[in-house]
Image (cartoon, rainbow, N blue to C red; front, top):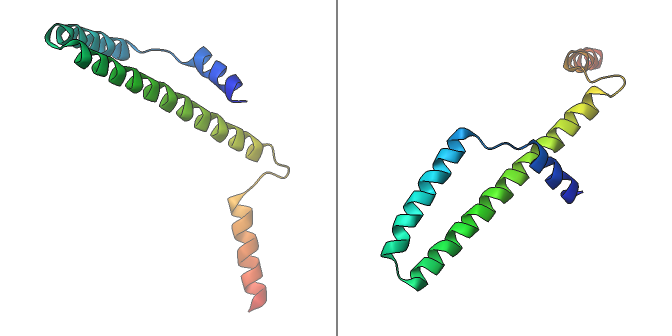
Length: 101
């Protein structure tokens, strides 16, 4: 199931122009840093950026899956027969309270 949700996520996720702007700025700063850092520092920096990308991707997928679960729960609730009604439940609770008195 996670692979199916991952495929749906890839299919329906779009990259905003703001995200593209931020990525270009990140790449510009990274290029400047490359010239100022030594090899071992560059390796650490690139590893950190890779981890941040992985975290962002996983967070996005987790959020997408949570949204799909929410949508599924709403769909199931709406398809119940008879459908749930807060007013009906509230009236039934009040009727039972009055009968108990």
